[in-house]
Length: 183
Image (cartoon, rainbow, N blue to C red):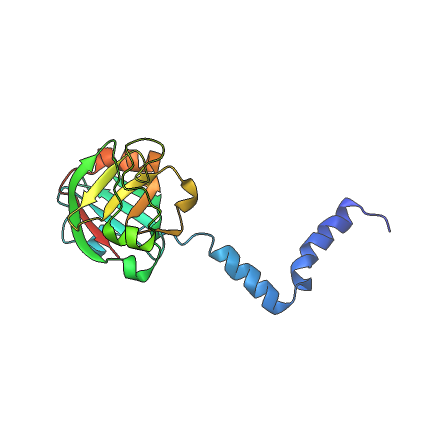
């Protein structure tokens, strides 16, 4: 059989019809759900912007930021807590920031994994990455990570993790007092 441009084109056009209907529906639904990241409207979650607003959408594994000016908007992929027991939902705010965080595991973390180090100084081994924004809830932090495999996965002990370059940008945009909602 000789292949010409015409036969290749006709074959390519006919290929979708040759796929069984259930398989085609599965392929089509997969294509239409490339990413679950969707822009959100801050008004659906906050009464006003104040100093700014952060929505950590744990279902879609995305963090949304709106600046106080109403014009600044950022959307970042994030890591989320490993289990529902480690997850806290609700409203809080940024109460402290660190541009070179150090880390100490909580008592619960040490109970779950006694091999954890008792202290990690700032630097490439620190699980908090290059920046950390501490929330009013004890031990809950929006922070960076040097382990980029964690982003987009349930991998934290309650915190929301971002790529270091994203947390560095957010750190500059979100002042202390920025309202936060974990949804």
